[in-house]
Length: 454
Image (cartoon, rainbow, N blue to C red):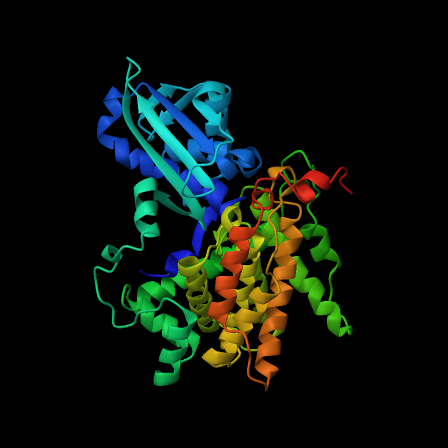
């Protein structure tokens, strides 16, 4: 399976709670495409974390966008507002973009506090005929990073079925140990290994084009974040956007620590765009979407030689590291806390930065390990169910830790004790042991203790 889709162009504020439900709506439309003439009513039920933080994460609106056959790449604020008003004010939904149905937002979209058995982010969509009989239904799970599976697919994945291995690949990459062995044997760095792996699924032109498109959108999102149309982010926190003013104030300085201000600027600008519900790149999630581009912008603007080719190498390395988290642990805050989102992004960025600066695979994996090691136990407690506090600033700290980990690994002379695979396993175990209140439910932590907003 290709790792390119670790990075995808999506819509904020959450890959699991916004992009995921939207994609579920798209998938359901494909499922019922030939049954539209029978359908007269639709019902959506959000479960678990999707329900508990769904309004703040726009889960309710996102699934409606998807059921209207809208796609993330083509969304605009005007289109979103039109579809939202049709559903909430006019009581109608244009199912699959083809058939207009009556839609009662209060009755046809249900927020259930129950948790479905296979994952914390569950949802069910069902459609009925004129007599009230079910025409079709499906249960979807948004497993993080904008990846969506049906209940049957997730059960199959949980059984670790060998049916997924339909084709024997020349290069099999399931963990860091395999990656390091191959790099040592063939004298490759992680970027080269990732590139050779992707060539099993795509042409070199497709790989290059995809990576450059992702990098272009990341830079576009940063620009949009520093040139916002609104001074405040949506939601009950009424949080003032900081990136525009920060960009005006930040300047080159003789203070060597002044570079941190620029890194913070890059991360905050992108994270604020995500919090506004705008277009972003899932990297590997929306909640952590600013970590990787902030490190890339640091390399582009404050180091020598960061070209488009280096950007491709960076993204190839990052997606490889991200795939190890996705295969062996989780990139979902609702499943394993914020360590799975900001921690994974920081780990990906650390390995990628070390690689483009000349580190071999061993040092790059050590950078990835250190970045995650110092995010272990990080909870996901979004205030008001919004991806704003503490999420925006957390992206900046994730980027700073990534840069620190890369530099520490590259200057290290001693042999590391902890391996990347071991820290990935530890993160997942920690996440599973974590109380559900601290896994994107807004039932604990800052989400319940914050009484005032400064």
